[in-house]
Image 1 (cartoon, rainbow, N blue to C red):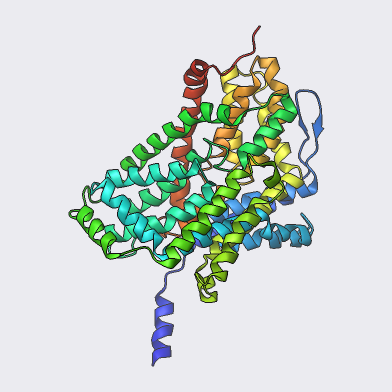
Image 2 (image 1 turned 90 degrees about the vertical axis):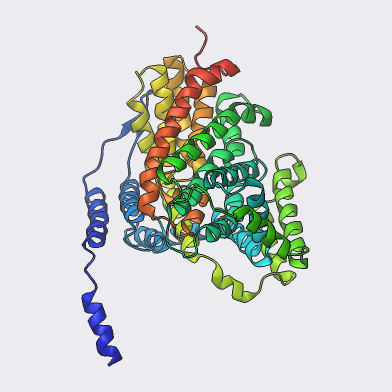
Length: 493
C-alpha cells in the first residue's frame, strides 16, 4: 500500500522544465565554444600577440557552463564544482592530477578551517552569548539590527580575514534570525541579513592588509611592476572611505529591497538581556574556544609585521585551531558531519576553474581583448574599465589573479592616456574585494548561502545591482574623493 502511495506521489511531481532547459543551455554553451574554430589572437598596445590555445578555449567553454549551472542551480552548487574537475579531465583541458589537486588548495582548506571556527562558536555557546549581547545594545528596530550586524562584520574585517569573519558571524546571524522568525522559511529580513553580511564582508576586507591576502600580494605585485611601494597606512588611508561608503550604501540597499516584514520586534531587548543572563558564567569550552581563535588570528595578523612568521602559511596556522579543538575535546568526530561539504566542494570547483583560466592563459586573452577596447578612451573610462573587468573576473577566478592579468596591460596603456598607476591599482584592488555576482566569488558569499534564506539566482540578481552601486562609488572616488585626498589620478604634463 505504501509503495503504491509513494508511486502516486512521484507521478504527481511536476516536470521541472526550467531546470532541464538551463542544464542543456550550459551544455550547449560549452559545446559551441569548445568545438568552435580557432579564435583570433588578442593583441596588446605594444603589438604582442596572445594566442588562445585549444585548452584556453576549453577553459572558456567550461567557464560558460559552470556560470550557467551555478546561477540557475540546475545541480547542487557543490556538484557543479565536481563537474568542473570532471570536464577538465574528460576533455583534456588540464591533466586530472592538476585539475583535481585544486580541490585541496590551501585557500579551500582555509575556508574549511574558518567554517570549523564558526561551528565551534555555535557548539560552545559563544554565538548565543555574542548575539544576545549585541541585541541588548542595538535594540528592537530591525533596521538597527541590520546596521549593527553589518558594522560588527566590517569592524572584524579590519583585524581578521573576511572568510573567518563570515564564518564567525554566520552562526550569530542564524541565532538572531531565529529570534525574528520561528520557522526556517525565507523572510525578507533573513535575505537582507545574510546577503548584506556577505556584501559588507567584502567591502570591509579592502580596508586593511589584515582583511584578506589579496592586498599584500597586490602591493608586492605593484611594486615589482612600477617600483612604487604602497604602505600599510597608505592602503588604509585611501580605501577606508570607499569601504565604509559601500557599507552605508549596502545597508540602504538591504532596507530598500529587503525591508523587514516587522519594523520592530517588541520585547526583543528585554528578552535578549534575560537570555544572556540565563547563559550564566562562561564555560570552559567558551574560554578555550576564544583563546584558541584569538591566538590564531593574532598569529595570522602578525605575519604582516614579524619576519620570522612570514614563511609560515596562514592556512597552516588557521588549521592548527581545528586540531586544537579536537585535542581539547571541544569538538568530536560526530561534529564533522555538520560541516557544509556542499560549500567546500563549491570552492574546490571555484579554485579549479580559476586556475584553469589562469594556467591556460584564457583569462589573459580576455583581459587583453577587453582593455584593448579602451586604449583610446577618455582617462576616467579607461580607469573604470579596468575596475569593471577585475570586478567581473574576480567572481570566477582568484582576485589576485584577476589583478595580475589586468594590471600589466593596464599599466602599459595608462601612460599613453596620461593616467597615473596609483589610481589603477587602488580602483582594481577595491573591486577585486567585492565580487557580488556569484557564490563562488568569495567565501562569505558561499557561507551566507548556507542560511537557505536565498537562492543563487537571487544572489546574482541583487549582486548585479550592488555591482552597479560599487562602480558608481568607484567613479565618485576617482573623480572627487581621491584627488582631494592627494592621490595622483593623471600624470603631470
